[in-house]
Length: 336
Image (cartoon, helix red, strand yellow):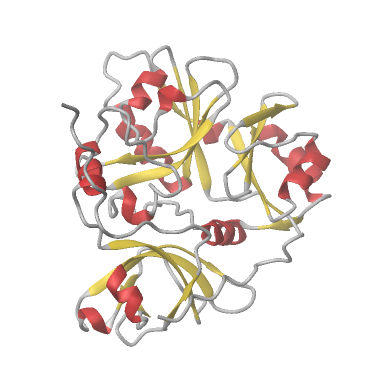
């Protein structure tokens, strides 16, 4: 198998960008029972977080498929306040679904996007740009406060999220724009693809178990916590199953790639798709880059096509992390 080529850069590595439109939204969860409630609903260990700390999370169906995912953090020193970032087109569906399970718990779930805005900063020098503009020194998965009700949180891959009251957003954006190039949601997606971190949207909700989307690799699943929706299936796949598909990065010589587009391979015949696009973005170098969940044997055959068996060819790109072996992990022996 030919060694995958590295993903081409979207911008010069030292040139940070600031994105006012990330296509991401916020859920604001608060209340005395908020932490315990989320701990019992999400794949991550919410109860392990100290104030200000963050983590990747997914919210799964009872069948173990990801309904949504993103990053969350405990807001400030309030012991019962969490901000959850997810795809903007899933904010209301997930708010409604989570609210169905609140019952008598002391939890309030609001659309935080109506009050707070999100900005994205990316590029090799993103941290320096944030420091020069905002006076903050970001830390991975830690919300660093600045000004009035504003926070900067660095993702593990170096991208930075800045949350603030919507009224302050234009001022913060202007400050960042003096140190970074103004970019759009397409650029923000490009950096997520380069990082190998998928974002589930309405088009791909309820399609993949977390491991198929490499969510276990990037740290979005805790295998030490208790029950949550789909936990039994996720755990069974981790310890007893054999995962046949994973998230891979590709390049296509076309500008027209949509989330949920199907991937085909002669290995699977002309009528059966072997994969699904999760995220895609146009590349300034031409064509598109994308993340797709694909059957591993089809990736090895290197004959993947987009949309149809005769569609644009997909060329493998390197992910910035190693994938685990497809074989199931050994069982932990019982203590005598």
